[in-house]
Length: 476
Image 1 (tube, rainbow, N blue to C red):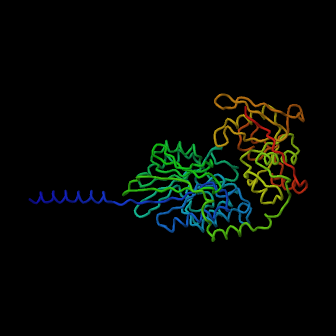
Image 2: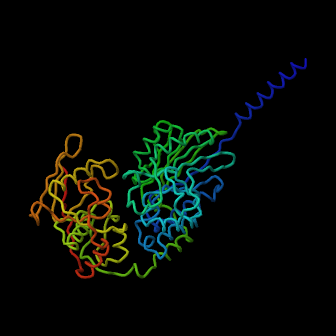
């Protein structure tokens, strides 16, 4: 009888447990995400308005995360007395929860990065880099957050697309040891067993995020960055939802995760256009204060008509050629960070917003064949500039011939007469010299001036300028 009573009790207990499980209410967690904001502080008040609205509804279930490249692109941040400080102060004031690193975090060197990251109140994660030999404190490879009994695990990954390190100048990353992001993620896939929701915050690019999702089906969600891809609705790759918000705070990502018990039932991701959101007055006041810097708002020249992107590329490449005495100059498309300039005054801020990287021209003597190889290799490379007209010239023009698959097969050059034998004096940025794959890579001789210095000197002496938007490159 006793054994039978125990058996009945066990059956009743099992029924009660199953009933309790069946009656578990659903829980919803919201992750608001940004990536590649590039110091677009003019839109930060709108982001703050969005975040404040969600937190007013249920702050305990809202997380705010960032996937890297918080600065480089706005002189009011990049040239502040404490470089980068305004965007970190804004992020701290908005109480970001977690952020990883992008390649542009390293643009100002490790001393500046360490100073700003040690001031940051958000949690910093980076899985595929060892920063223990730097002055940056409290960077973890991963972290967990517990929200009402739900455990969320986060990894942080950065691209290592250039010779085993992020895009940028290797001298700015001294003391950091990077590893392949895919290998690092694979090494941590066992964290799946320690959390209910497994998230990667990445700065590797949208296509690369898809590869990561295939490699690591353990991940529920990838919050991406680096390629500036606008993904209007999170897309599923196998079982993983892959997201990205574009760049410059035009959008924020809203990811709503629905769980029943400890099981993920649904992940819904969409973008919110931030200029449709009413700005937070508090954050607008902060931004207005940053933008009042008189040294940056000073006019240093003018243009007779509005300059579109092509006109700006012509202008910057021409300034590099004329300012260095080169036969030819190359300006890479990714270094130009504005789309246009209106007619009228050009300020210091305009120049540094256009070219925010502190790039310096170097001089290299090259043959026509080496020039062709530079252009062709870059065109056929992988990455976000692949199969685009990335290298923009002054003093020459060129046409890329392609096959049926869109790959470059030949470069037709329209060159001036060489200055010595079969050689041309070529000016390009020190970034191109160190990062692009071509026969004379790394051999550039420094000119000792920044591109921005050449531009400001030219504007001071030759304003108003008369820009041309004639295309100098094409694909056939």
